[in-house]
Length: 455
Image (cartoon, rainbow, N blue to C red; front, side):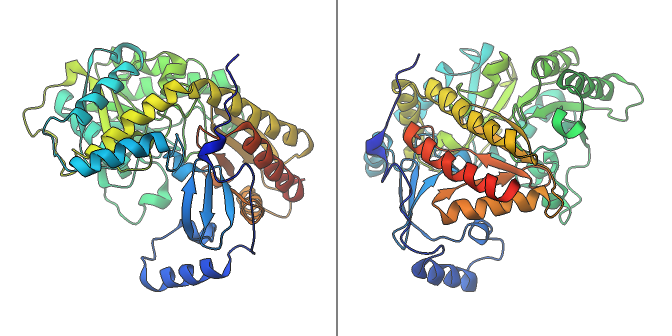
């Protein structure tokens, strides 16, 4: 049994402190100012109308002095919490020395690469190379597309329905959601999306869902009349994030790895949202004991939200010449130090075990709600990567139910978000430093909101 961690000193408070209506008067002013001058592409404050002043640990404070419990963590970026002092200390020290180093060797760069090797999944440990490029997850996905096509000579990309891999051209081609891409076609031409084993949506047994999904991939690669002539690789999320926190059935990822090996193409496992302890293991790949051929990383790799991405791949794929993959910000030394310190903090505080224990507590609370709420139809996830799916009621769609729950939660001081193909999944991804007290208070508010709106 892991020692329970409190991390009290990392946060503003152990429970919400709401002083005004949400949004408060100062937030309203900034929201209106943003509306006048910022891009119409701004999305998050249109759903959660607050203006942020500061944040610590698993708490966020707005400009009106309201303190919220953060069950969103910047879309899974802040795994060790906002403004983690152990990480901040090293980041500030590095920033005073040098920040922009392209790909010249620095201790920050090499120490992070070695730390990533130490936590690499499966046989990637001691058999990998790491490349940095642009600062976002989309950039890391683009790197894997280049890596796969360069090594195989193919141009056929296999991805899954429900997938989200990013918003740049190649990453968007792999992303499945039509709402993200329908206005920007044509994208990459030779991309095939096959069904992900989403048993709840398919209404079938999980084992059958996995078997069907694997059969689809196998036929696409091995049927001489599948139409996919020159495959380059398979891209998969080990747990779909935007798709609804969909964890595949046991055997799916190992089966996918076997198919990739049999057809001599790489398996690219997108750990951008699931990495760095989010699921209670260093990477979600660890749950199935598989070795990705390539693994894009971003989000939490920057420690405290600093922009950084990287791609780890098997050393056999390291065939690039100098300049084979580049990016101006591939030497963000403060972010690299931040990533190193975050790995150390997770290890020193046994946050993997903490994430597993607290995640199971959160899912148990949601399952209790599901017993008395017929429209809460599925609770799933691993570690602190939690999804709760809602079905349509007679009066409201599942998406509208989630929106109503979300609104009541932020009014009472808990920030949560949505996911799912139809926006009908409540997504809970708090920092790994969330305390048991905060989890209890937060789930009291969330479950009462579910009871009120989905009963």
